[in-house]
Length: 523
Ligand code: PLP
Image 1 (cartoon, rainbow, N blue to C red):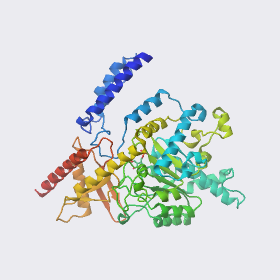
Image 2 (image 1 turned 90 degrees about the vertical axis):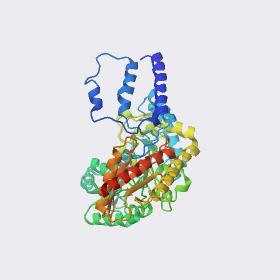
Image 3 (image 1 turned 60 degrees about the horizontal axis):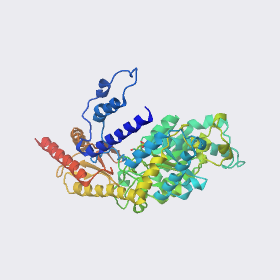
Image 4 (image 1 turned 120 degrees about the vertical axis):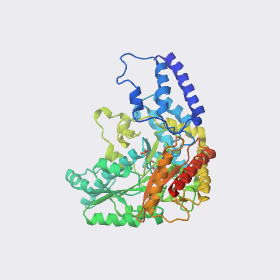
């Protein structure tokens, strides 16, 4: 394609994207296709000769769009909102137009420095401690592809730090953690298999997955429904002591601000105190859930919601600032930036570089050697990276802090309105205190007694019925605590195209299906 053809096809693509958005609300949220539909429709091999781009673009409309679930639809209430804005789309367009792998500052100085600037802006917007500013020279931030990648990277940094601490302890005070510490091979080999990671049964699967990748143990600690499914320090302390007594080495704890299932906020200060007592331990805060809880005294809200000063106490921001060794939140969920844009901050950048800086001759640069620039390859798993800061920059400048706050508050308002609808009905129960823009509910028929197992079966039936509706997309979850195991349905608001009418219309379908189900059970 030459530049003039690109101009023509580019304009046509923008027209097609605009048409998609102007007709989006008239589509159903879920596609009407069966598994294998696309595989059957497309040829089994790539064409031998090139095809005209207009035909390719037409096939996007004919084959791809019909198979899409419309995450940008106002009635999308499954998983989490994955809001994209036009500013973000344009950011991705500019970014891919200057594709470069940005691993060293010299690869494209603007690529590294814009990331530093916007990540420092975000420290300010979210109210994070200044130690997380890249300009602090000590901590700093990086944009990663996902919260899972951020947690894995944190665990790798924590593992190396634990081994350095063990080396230090073995040196009987001859070294300090600020020294360049070479971990002896023998200590590395003997200690690594003993390292243990901790989270709770409500921690996102990213914890268990990071442990699996690293070949280490992950303990999912129990939580209590009476603590709103949040992890307590005493539970962590007991597990850590038990493991130390068994000759193991605790090294990594994940505290969550806004768990996936209910938006619970772990007791960060309690957990942090346990971590502090054990020099081999590191605290990572995962605050990457797409939505949080609807505004209560102990309300739970996810990391992006720190942009709202009124949420910070409930979301234990001061505790995060005091105790977190690393912190992650996803702008690519509730934060108006298209996938992928996960913000990952560390209190001590050295925790990353000690674990990840591998510099063969061909990657060396004058500026890197002088230590006057950041080479992000030493802060992440891969070498190359995308120029993701552009879309964040575009969104922050175009919306301003006030625009972002307005968007977040709208999702919270919708959740409060939904809460009123649900509590007004005798047959429904709100399962955990609503959090920011997430409400967990279940059907509990009034004036009749049911065991938890029967209620779970009833709600599985309700969810199965809802799954059949092309315009209802709600995900289920199982809330496991010491006291119970509750199957419930999540209503995750916060999409930037959602109106209150969207919430009300989808809820009306839930209500009608529940009524039909109860009638059928009576018959
Ligand atoms: N952490 C929490 C608390 C989540 O709820 C989720 C996803 O829903 C994730 C992490 C996963 O994020 P990512 O897809 O960026 O790895």
